[in-house]
Amino acid sequence: MPLECVVCGTLLTTRSPGAVGPYPICHAVPCRMVLDQRATLGEAAFRQHLHWRARNTREQRARARAEDERLRTLTASESAENLAQWAAVEAHLPSHQADQFIRLALPSGPARQRKPAQGRRHNYRDHLKDIIAQATLPNDEAPPADVVATASGSTLPGQVCALCRGGCCTRGGDTAYLSADTVRRVMAQQPHWRPEEVMSAYLDRLAPKTQAGSCINHTAGGCALPREMRSDVCNRYLCDSQKELQGRLDEAPALRGVVVVQRRQDHWSRHLPERDNGVVGAASLTESSVSPGPGNS
Ligand code: SF4
Ligand code: SF4
Ligand SMILES: [Zn+2]
Image (cartoon, rainbow, N blue to C red; front, top):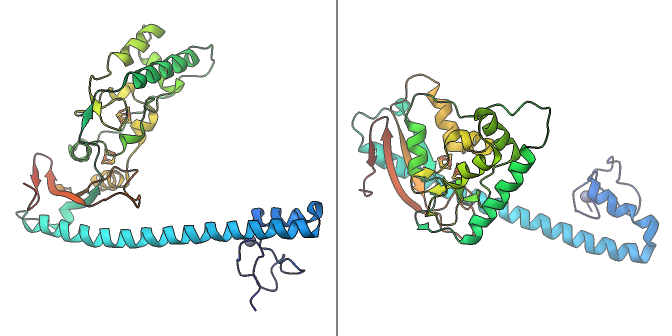
């Protein structure tokens, strides 16, 4: 009979430090903490406790394994579908050369617009009030450095985000990742702005209609805030496809364009089991043009 941890079921060797005694245990801290209860609970109560903890731990592990397997299967089937979509777009690209185009998969930001509920505007105003108050407390620290994404001179990163429609902005909620640090940075750049003016600068940029289910600053035309008023989170964040693109732009041979397959869900919902993440489009982008893939015109 193989020796296994009484809590989590991990296989142990006879040389494992916790392998001796009536309750073999692995090195994991949560498992050892269960065993530590033996000293205080008494044998009968400890056995009951152990039974519950072992059952919960093994159920959690089984769920995690099933989820890993689901994601592996999903990723494999999406990858196969992406390959076919990219190849179909490339077949229609005049003088396509594989080393001059990069293949990317994108999520989709919300397509519909909605007037933000009054409650959302109140939440935003309250959040701004809090962070402006924090930012204007006496503080000896230098204001945070200006963080603005580096411009490569290529139009492709902006075109890719525009095609995606802000698929990563959907978690911005009513606070848009803005913090006291953002306000301190903005006030350092605009030294004549008093707190009321900072507040107005943000509130004045609220659009009458925003993208349904997304950040309060997410509009059909992109972010309503100029880069210097956005949070560092927003200015720094790149999804994997953008990272890949921006890395490739620094390399030779020069990139002529991007071949994109786009899926239905946003960046954060794309792997949820209850959501259909089917392909919604495929296209090629160059510095100066966007061409829908075959069947997407
Ligand atoms: S960073 Fe990625 S997910 Fe976010 S808008 Fe751009 S392409 Fe879409
Ligand atoms: S503030 Fe702008 S960039 Fe940041 S999440 Fe909202 S819409 Fe996106
Ligand atoms: Zn264990």
